[in-house]
Length: 193
Image 1 (cartoon, one colour):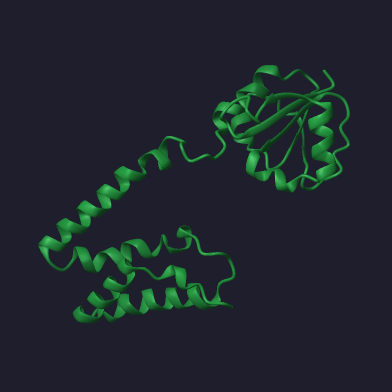
Image 2 (cartoon, rainbow, N blue to C red):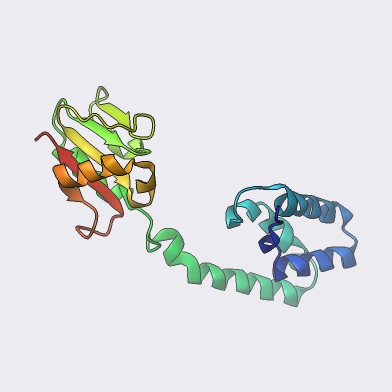
């Protein structure tokens, strides 16, 4: 509580009206059940990802009724996609650009280095030796840094670092990426080198 009324929109209301007019009780039951759960029984904050499964079901009444309505809805969906293409596919949304930041690690990595990270995306580090030691700073929040290596986190995940550990990293380690050095949104520091 309180209910998440934000899930309800004009597309949804129009689709429900069309489903009632067309007497498609099966789709109406599915959509209403899903919405009741989202609005009244969920705790997470409203997000578009939760309503993604409803998209095709909501569009179906529009696409299956009149030809002019089908063309209009298809045109609106294509325009919305064209407007959002930069956000979706070209990384202009401010999120971390891991595929551009992590090569710094692979280029500067030396045998015996450790990687301390918050939710490391190891897919981009497949070129490193398999015996590379990776320490998760969420599971090991004290950050007992020994030897040499790197500390990595995405800008929006800095909240998972303890303030004292973050202050130590920023004061004592050499910064390789992040905070104005690049537009990647990934903080990279090296130590013990």
